[in-house]
Image (cartoon, rainbow, N blue to C red; front, top):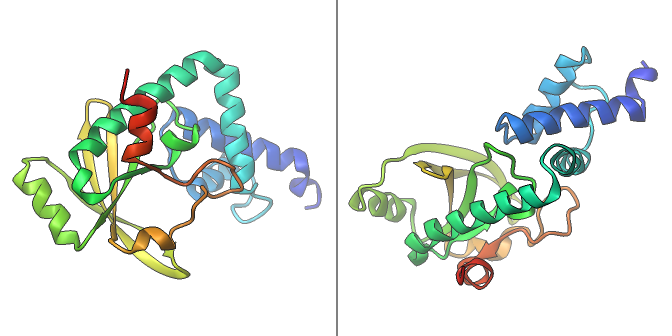
Amino acid sequence: MKESCSRHTRLLVAQQAARMMAEEGVDDYGHAKRKAARQLGLPDDRCLPSNAEVEQAIREHHDIFHHGDSHAQHLAQLRRAALEVMRGFARFDPHLTGAVLDGTAGRHAGMEIELFADSLKEVEMFLLNSGIPYRRDERSQRVGGEKLQVPVFLLETESGQVRLLVYGRDDLRALPKRVRYGSAAPGRASLATLSQLYGQD
């Protein structure tokens, strides 16, 4: 089993997982790694790469297959689209996060936008009153050292799926300031920050 845990094997799994996340719209690191391991004939629980290794493989995949300039243009388009969505939810202090912000978004990537509200019902009533179709979901996440089930509203837009993660008004301070997996990128960008970068085009 030592050979199956080699650095080369971890790299192969990372590259396969990166391809699925970049090309197939898979957005969960754990799921992508386990599926990649199965496709390569490896046990699910052995020698899986770290999320940081997969993130690096995603960036390399984009550089190789989508060229730096075209990928940068794609990201800029997604960020502008996210800005428009965030403007519509300005009352909930929206923040962009996830692959569109950290630069790993592929062709099928959805936008992740965090909202901060007094209650989940407040956001749901806003969606209903605005006539915006949605589906409900949830995500397990640590907030201030506590593992919570974070409510998610899924919207379908012309620019792809938008995932609205709904937190309490005071949760912003408890969320990580940096994205996971060792990246130096900020964990979230406010409406003001995104407006400065893309609001004048």
